[in-house]
Amino acid sequence: MAEVNFNDLKQLLIKNCMLRVSPEEIKEETPLFGPDSLGLDSIDALQMTVGIEQEYGIALKTPEEARQAFQSLASLKEWLRAELEKTPKAT
Amino acid sequence: MSSLTPHGEGFSFLDTFEMTANPKRGRGAKWLDPQLPFFADHFPGKPLMPAVLLIECAAQAAGALWAVHQGAKSTVPFALAQVVQFKILRAVLPGENVETDVTLETEFGQLAQFAVALRVNQREVALGRLALALDLGRGPESSLG
Image 1 (cartoon, each protein chain N blue to C red):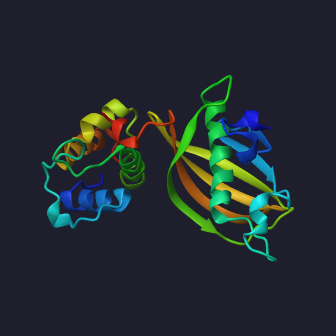
Image 2: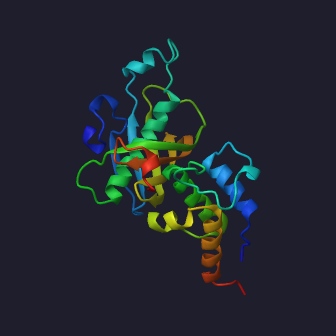
């Protein structure tokens, strides 16, 4: 099972959303969308969806699911952890 | 064939569009009439298809695919939302026929991402990935809210 850690998610975020911030500036609870957030938009959400599928093999199926998962890196990590637990383990 | 896309005839970069057996793939084509006005100045004496218009060819083919994929009975308003990647492999000249193979990779609410491969005489001239947004006139910032 792929490990999920904050540094990897920060790098994924910076790369896929072309953010001009350092990983240190992104906190786990910082909102990704809306006021006082990193200022992502729906194009960024699409690119994060594509990046997560490429990196972890898990697809976000609906914008509503994405809305829940993309509240912050902490919520994204928790969503990914839960999804990876559902994935059958290789024997 | 302005009916293939919402564009007016003067900005149509899609003459034909056909689906493949795979419902997520299609192929568009555009013949580059040497009389198209931009060839006169891009560049004087050495006409060359502008790279941004190759992207437009791909975006219009992607839009046509998206409309078919959604079962739309008429053209669907869309806007190019992001050029994720686009690599020009060789120059495209007046009089050439540009074929665009387009594949729907991801749909996400009002957005969708497409892989595109442009060919002239079966030779790749450009490759890329584009994101389109439905609903013209609406900024991407609102779609998750």
